[in-house]
Structure formats: C-alpha cells, structure tokens
Image (tube, rainbow, N blue to C red; front, side, top):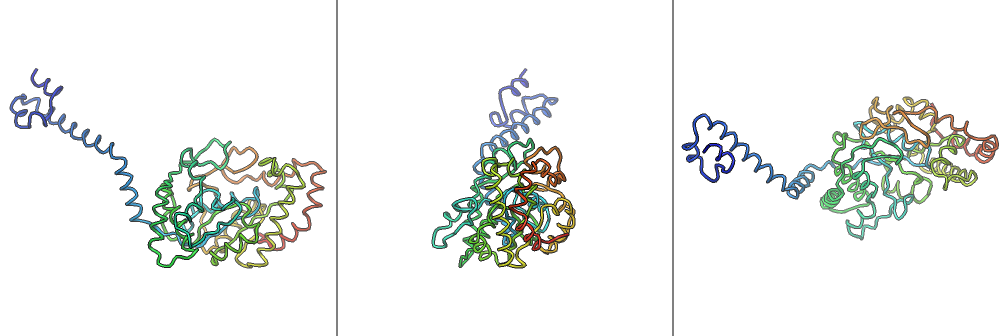
Length: 374
C-alpha cells in the first residue's frame, strides 16, 4: 500500500532517496528506481521541448560557424520559356562539382526579366531585399513543385531568416566589397540556408541556374558578364513548330496568338545570335531536339565545357538528387526525359505550320549555324 502511494503521488525530489529506500520493500526498489529514472528523463525532455528559440539560435550559430562559401562563377541558362531551360537545369542537379539552383533563379529586379542593379552605396540589407527570391517561401511551406498541377512535391527546408544572417555575416568578412562579392554573398547565403540540400559539400566549379528571358536583353547580358567575366551563358533553341504548341498551352494569354508568340520566339533567337557574336566562347547555344534525343552526347559536351567530370546523374532530371517528372504543358506520367516533346508539331494545323515556317525559317537556320550540334 505504501509502495503504491509512493509511485502514484511522490518522487525522489519530495521524500529523498534515503527515505524511500527505507520505506519501500526490497522487491519494489528496482521498479521505483526505474520510475525515478523515467521521471528525470521526462523532465529533461519537457525542458528541451520548451526551448525552441534556444535551439533555433544554436542552429544559426552552428550554420554560421560552418559556412561553405559559394564563389564559383554562374553558368546561366536563359532563353524564351518552353525551350528546355528547366530540363537542362534538372540535368545539372546533383552533380558533385556543381551548385544547382533548384528552381528558376528569380533574382530579377524590379521585374523578373531584368538583371538586378545593385548600388554599392546602399546598405547590405537593401541588397538582400533586391536579390531575395520570394518563391522559396511558398516552397518551404508547401513543398517544391515546378507546376501547380503536378501531384508530387519535394521537401525543401529553407530558412529565410538564416539566409539573411549568412548574407550579412559573409559581407562582414569582406574588406572592400565589389558587385561580385554581393552576388557571392547571395549564393553563399542561399545554398547554406537550404538545410536539406543533398549536394552541399565538395569543391564546386560552377553554380548553374535557369532564368527565362534574361538573355533576351542586351543590358542584362552586359551586367551579367561584368559581374561574372568567368561565367557562361547557355541558351537552348527549340524548333518553333514544337515550341509553339507547348507555349500556347502553357500560357494562352501570352502565347495564344500565334503571330505575337512567334515574335517573342524570334526575339529570343535574335538575342542568341547577338550574344554569341559579342561574347564568343562564353556563350553556348544548344538545340532542344539534341538535348532530348542525344542527351548523353550533349551532357558530355557540357561537362567538358564546364570542366567537370562526366557523371551518369547528368542524364537524369532530378530535384535535390531525386528523380522528377518533366515540366511539360502536356500530361507527364513518368520521370525522366519525354521523347514525345519532339512531336508537338503534330497538334498544329497546316495553316499554323505554314505561318511558323514563313515567320521563323530564316532566323532559325541562322541560329542553327551557331549552335553546337551532335
């Protein structure tokens, strides 16, 4: 009776260990000691469970103490949408010598398609306000999806407040800050605040990232190569007969009118010619058709261009090293590259094919003479 009351109502901290040892029968001492041990463990656990702010602070301190600087040049993938930029960025994902941005790089300011202009006379807080990618907030809360209609979502653990701490901490270590330092600080803060990044360690040769249309503006490319003279621009051109059905289905309000849509495609194509003529070997033009049908040859070529070792993961579209379904305007039931993207022209009428041919044939041929072929 006394033993049971002790178990139910008292603890070592109320009676003391010597008193309980005297009162409780010998055969109950083992059980009582286990009970005391359990109570101590629960008390410690509850204390730790209430220390979320302390734990978060410890996490920040640990991350700041083990920052991996990201100072590699940027290999920017850019051209008009629905041309294979997302596919190429997903093929780069997971390579041990690359930091692959997991989503579209949205540092454009004040609009998505404008290379951000950073004023070094302003404060670092302002620089981060300009460069910060708001899309990461939604990915953190709801999981990463390239398209809203896809059923698979990927866990992305990213702390914006930690990114700010890392960004400011990195710049504090730089004596005379340049524009490149600001962008290095941003890349460092981004990839270090991405806590479940499966490919964060090891020496990296490049940061790879896709941003639609940035390469279509002359001023953007001037700013990009001023900051990244060691950077690369990779542009993918897609046969307009296959491009238009995908673009029109993706954004009918933007690309639904075939004439206006082809004007945008032509603007992208002309930009490829201009960029290649001006920046030479720092610009690589690929065809979407080669990327899909000759993936290994294309990726081996790009591995050599980026001076990285070829790895089989370069042939598998992934997100954070996990296989991912295609970012297509049409239905995608499987992971990997979809060869049917080469036959989208079959959905067009003879009249539409004639319009596309008359508006794009000449410039498409000019771009193909500058593109790497396999």
